[in-house]
Length: 74
Image 1 (spheres, rainbow, N blue to C red):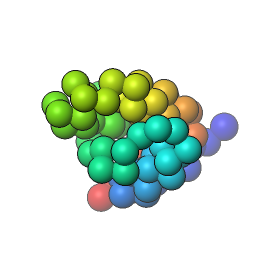
Image 2: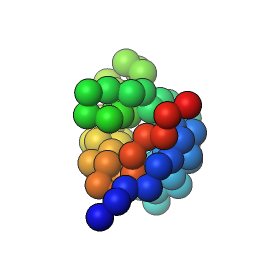
Image 3: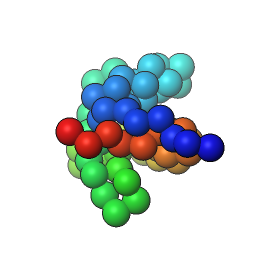
Image 4: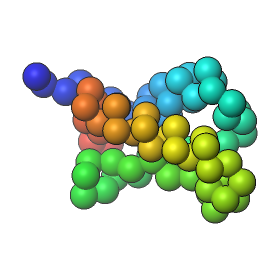
């Protein structure tokens, strides 16, 4: 099945929408950066240490979204 091309901005938007249903602060920083796996979601050190449950949710979402979307070239 072909994956849909999507911008990093749209991936962040989708991630924020999905995270809003969990106990994650809306101020949690998320950035999408290109990587050898296609893309990686990263957060700040403060968020990684202060909100480990949200970081786990972000990693789960990243895995789910990788199956559906491919990062569009800017």
